[in-house]
Image 1 (cartoon, rainbow, N blue to C red):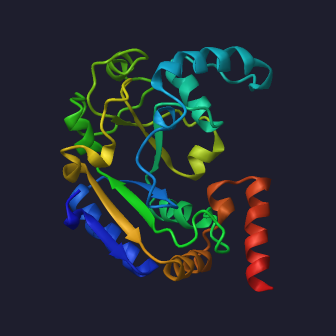
Image 2: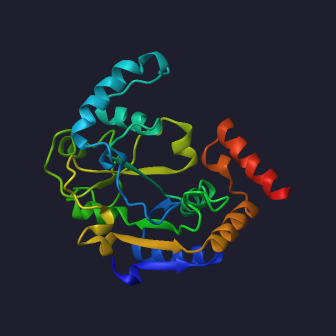
Length: 260
C-alpha cells in the first residue's frame, strides 16, 4: 500500500479529520477497526486452522445441530442467510465484518484490547482502522450495480457467482446482509463476501488496493489510552457496540477500575 494511503493520528480530533478527508475521496466509506496492527483483512474461514474446503461441512453441521436453538421466526431462504447467522455466532465463514460508522470502528479497535498491563497480548501494539470504498471495490469485482451496494438476500448475480465451490470471482464483493439481529443494527454492520478460493490475495495486498483502501493508524499505548478516554467522554462504550449483559459487565469493570 502506498504511504499516502496510510494516515497516522494522535487523537480523536485527528481521526475525525482523517475520516472527513477520506470521505471526500471515497464517497461511500466503510470501516473496520483492528486492535492489533498485525491483523490482516482475512475472513475467519481462511485463518488457520480452517480452509475454504471446510465451508460445506460447517454449513451442513450448523444447519442440522442449531435447530433446537433457533427462534421460530428464523426462516433462511438460501445458504447466504445461514452464513450470516453462522458469522454472528462465531462460525468460520467467507464474510468479513465492516461498519458504515467510523466511530464504531474506532471504538472496536480500542475497547476490546488486552492491554491493561504489560502481559496483555495487545499491550504496546498499534491499532488500525481500515477504510474501504465499497463501490470502487465492486466495480473491480465486475458487479453490474455500480451506484449502490447490493443486498445478498436479493441479488441473484452475486448468489450465483459467489456460491460455495465457485472459482470464478477474483475480488471480494461489498454487500448488505439481512438485519436479523440487534448487533448488526447497533454496529451498522456491512460485509465483504470473499470468493471461494484461498488464492485470492489479502485485500490490503491486492495490486489495486490503493484504489479502494486506506488505513488510519494510531501508535503507542499512551495515545490509544487517550483516544479510549475521549470516546468514553462522548458516550461510546462496550454496550454501544454489544447491547447485552456480558458487555455491560465489561463496561462497568473498565469504568469502575479507572475510577478507583
